[in-house]
Length: 165
Picture 1 (cartoon, rainbow, N blue to C red):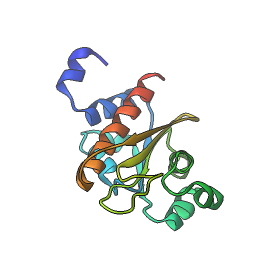
Picture 2 (cartoon, rainbow, N blue to C red; picture 1 turned 120 degrees about the vertical axis):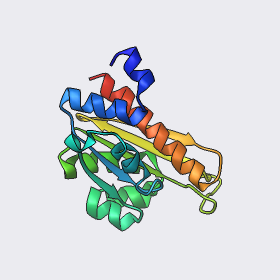
Picture 3 (cartoon, rainbow, N blue to C red; picture 1 turned 30 degrees about the horizontal axis):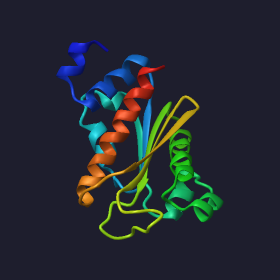
């Protein structure tokens, strides 16, 4: 998209425009962000042409049932892991029959952190046409700040990946 378009539009509007232009559909799978990611995407006018479905899978059972995250993955690596984030994105894409899927899983706090997995640890995954990228972030701040930073990072990853196809 042109430079003036980027300056005049929000990140979610740029993503929606790019998805529409390329004829791609999108789905979301969220744990720690609890629907904020879907909400940000839905802020963009015209997104209804490409947004398929969103899954809020806070429990491990929901991740298994709705996104087909492997029980072994959850048992071995935990809900907050690279492996789970990847399987969430792939599962959302397949369940929604979407070309693009975004997933978030993490520890927003203030409780739940450990030395190995501190509060603020979030894994963000983006699936685009059989390619899945997972990013690990450790965000500082209160619960709402961690959740909002995770959404922003997920949208930035999606924009980067969608622009390359």
